[in-house]
Image (cartoon, rainbow, N blue to C red):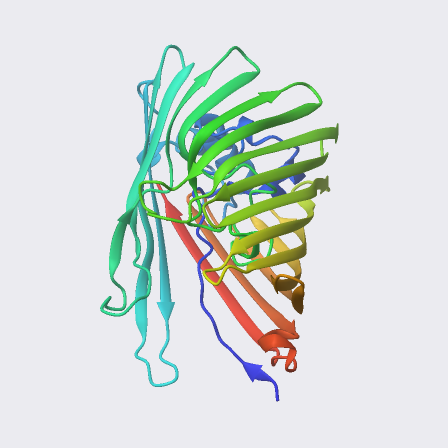
Length: 393
């Protein structure tokens, strides 16, 4: 029997235009538009102006408004910045859950963030900090819709010349493609989803053809009391052309009871103006020490492919394929047992920027799992509807 699950969900991301698929516009490096050279987080002045004049549509914009005027309105609260040292921004995301299964309809404030960037020494030194409200984790005694104060990013950065930068503080882990689709195996499946930022020291460098960096991390030590991975990761990309990049990432982390090793190959390809094809294929090997004295190994192979086709300015068709294959192996001495399962999902939808400062995204997909519940048969297929709205200043 085919089971229909209607799910409304927000992909939590830090900024409106932090999407790897914008290589279709000829921008392969996130450094061009973001204060964080690896992407995500607030946009710089050029990134805001580019989003307003190239990415966002003109659905509610008068024909008499030229692109120069749109760029001048891309600053905070529709103004051109009057000074060089302060750059604030506000992000809001909301979610409506209709009644189902006896539950009442609810509207959730998924993200209400304030970010401030302070710049010094002719933009060679800057600080970025984000604070906001997000839904509290579901647990006994926590009312539905309860909000908690949370910061996904705060760091100090310094430019060591034109081609080298260092970042110290809380940022996204340095690994793989930075995509907003946090429910796919390439994000949530490997433990690097929307709330898995880490404190650490990150070094970034780039040349005409190669861009990369290394990160030494310690986990979210101010929020989590246990389970923080201490380790290092590295990521590099090579530009084949203006609209073609290939890259690789490696991650190793450990704490008292676990070790995790991950590696991935990824690519970003642009074709036509605004269209792109993203791909990431990787593996994870995770070993957990159990209280019984045994160990459990988790081996995961995953793949992510997303095609974005630009039909007209501001409107993209999206096709996403997500795959994961996991094997659990537990052992005590010579005894061992393997319990494999796999999942894949296909999603079709669109991403629409009707005007600057606004994004709508909708997808419908099919999810199938094999061999779960310790191999006692397949779980039923599930259909999904995913909706997103985003407004920022």
